[in-house]
Amino acid sequence: MTGLAPTPLPLQAARTRPWLQHAPAPPVRLEEDWAEQPLRFRLVLPRAKRNRLSRRAEAMAPRRVCAVANCGAESLAVLLIDSEAEALLCPFHQLLYPDGTPVEGEPLLAVPGI
Image (tube, rainbow, N blue to C red; front, side, top):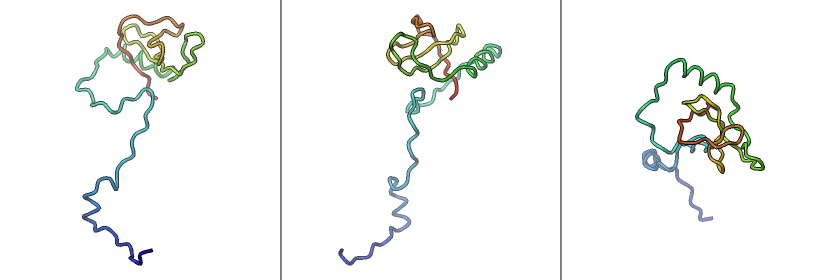
């Protein structure tokens, strides 16, 4: 012990040190990409298609096991916007239909809200 009493920081000094108080980092999850800048556009869909996709998304489980035999990886359930079909996004097998066949091309995806 030095015998010196601790002195509180002046109020102005606490304000100039941003590392003293900060918001916690958001949790990182498989489907979130919070580090990117927000897009400067919105995807516009016809109302009927949007409503169908919304109903399908509500009925889907957000995560499933990969459909490829012996994989077992956690996969993200997605909707293919053009065909309105369900698919799985596996970290190893990429984009698959629920029966395990790969999805061809680069379709637009919708992720159900979690």
